[in-house]
Structure formats: C-alpha cells, structure tokens
Amino acid sequence: MDIKTRVIEIIAEQAMLEPGDVQLTHTLADLGLDSLGLVESIFAIEEAFDITVPFNANEPEKSDFDISSVVTMITAVETLVKDQK
Image 1 (cartoon, rainbow, N blue to C red):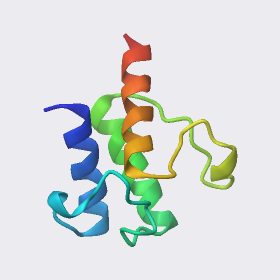
Image 2: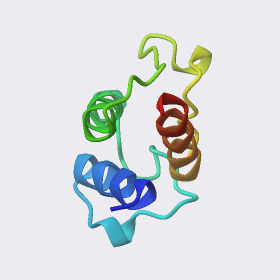
Image 3: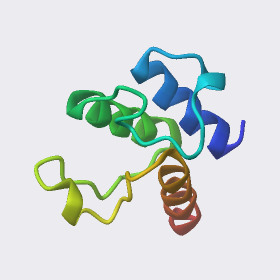
Image 4: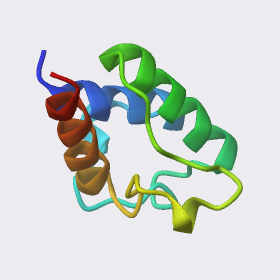
C-alpha cells in the first residue's frame, strides 16, 4: 500500500469517514477532526510508517510537520519515510 492511500485511510478513520470522502485539499477542520483526532492521527501515522513525526500538539503552528491539508500531511510523511532510509 502506498503512503498516500494509508495516510488517507488513517485520517478517514479518525474522522469517521470513508476514505473516498477525504479529498487532498481538505483541511482537518473540513473533515471534522479536532485536536484529539489530529494527535491520534499522528500517532497512527507514526506507527504505520515506523517514523517519528516532528509535531508539537501544544504549538502546532511551530511544528515542522505541515497539517494545513491532507496533501501537505501526505507530502510530509513521504519526506519523513524517505529521510529515514
């Protein structure tokens, strides 16, 4: 399974949506994810890809992990996976 598909599945699961309902341009707010859903999504992403996400839940705007949209999260995960190799 590719990174894009898995990240979308994780976000959809946390938002209690079908993966097909998650669009790349959606923000987490568009999907109804609150801060707890975001943190749970990040934990699931870390577990699924065996990576550490540089994210500070207390100051998300200062994190190196871009959560501004689904596509930016996918890009950030792809970068982290590539960098760990």
